[in-house]
Image: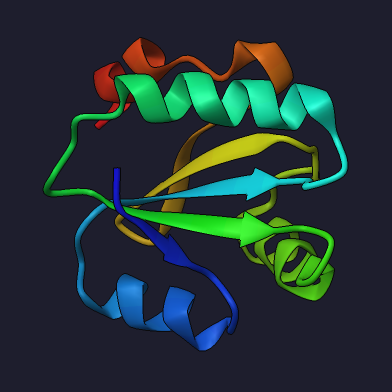
Length: 106
């Protein structure tokens, strides 16, 4: 799986302008549950045409807060968001993050 590290909110703005769906995985590097869920997600991910952003919440909490505000989704960790057509079409957190659910929503 090829993550794009999300380090500036301008990356989200650029992805929105590209008009293609993308996902954001919010990950806490201090949380074992987040690590487990991320690993499971990576093993199943097979969407080559959907950009996948990885957000390190410890370093870039302000980006997570901005995502929550802009897409009206309460911050959680770990959390997966699918952004399509300028809206959050799907989000899940903790053990509810399931790749097959994501695929159904694209």
